[in-house]
Figure (cartoon, rainbow, N blue to C red):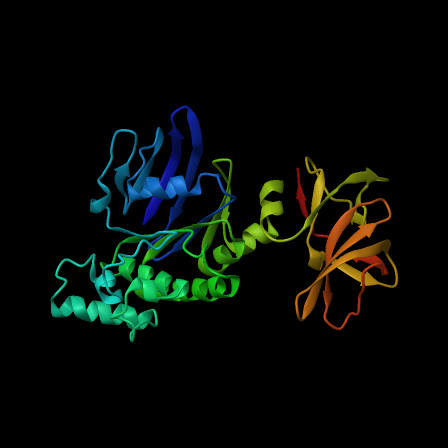
Length: 336
C-alpha cells in the first residue's frame, strides 16, 4: 500500500529525516513513534504531498508519487488526514463536517455514508450539533469520520489523541483500530506515546534524530530492541553493564553463563526479569508506584545501581525496606 525508500527531508541546510525506509501492506496499520522533533510529522507531511524530499521515494500502490523530481498533488493521492487539532469547520454541523469531502453531498448514497460513519463512531444522535458543543473525544471521532467518508486508500493520523486525557486516549485508540480494520483502510499514525502505538499499530517504527532505529511489531520492539535507544524508549527497563569473570559473563544481579557476548557491553533488564526472594543481591526500595494489581518499585543496590522491579499486589512492600533480588531469566537482551 505504502512504501518509503531512502527518504531524506531538510528545511534549508537542516536535515530532519535521513534515509528512512519502511512499508505498510494493504489494510495494515503502521506507526512512527519517537520524541518531539525526531522528524515523524515531517514524514507524514511528505506522504501527504506537502513536503518535497531532497532524496528518496514514496510509492502508493507501487505508483511513484514523491521523489526529488516527481510530486503528485495532495488531492490526487487518495489520502485522508486527521490532524492534531481536529480542524473541524465551526460553521458546519457534525453531519455536514462528515459529508464535506463527499462529491455528491446531497445524494442518498452520501447521506447513507454519513449515517453509517456516525453510527460507527457512536455519534448517530449528534449529527445536527456544531463542533463547539462537543467534547474533545467527540470532536476527535467526528474528525475521524470526516477523513474516512471518501474511503481513502491511506489514512494519516498526526498525534490525534495528544489533547485528550489519558483514559480517553486509551479507549479511543482501541476504537480507532477497530474502525480502521472494519473499513479495511491502511493507516499511518505518528505519536510520542508508546501506549497509543501499541494499542493501534500492527507494526511500529522508532525514530530518533531523523533516523529509523527499528521497524517491527510491539512485541519485537519490547523483547528484541535493536539498540539501547529503542530499549530505553520502549517500555520500562535498566541497562546494566557486563563483565567477564572466570570464563562467564556477569552483571550486578548475577551470572549470565558462558554466552558468546561478542560486541555487547550491557544487558537490558525489564522489571519482570527480577524477582524478590530470601536469597540474592541485597537492595533497598527507594520509591513505589502503586498500579492496582501490582506496584512498580525503584530499588537501589549497595553499589548505587538503581533499577525497576514489579511487585504483585499481595506482596507488601514499603519505602526503605531491605530486599534480595535475583534474575528471573538468563536469556536477557544484550546490547552494544
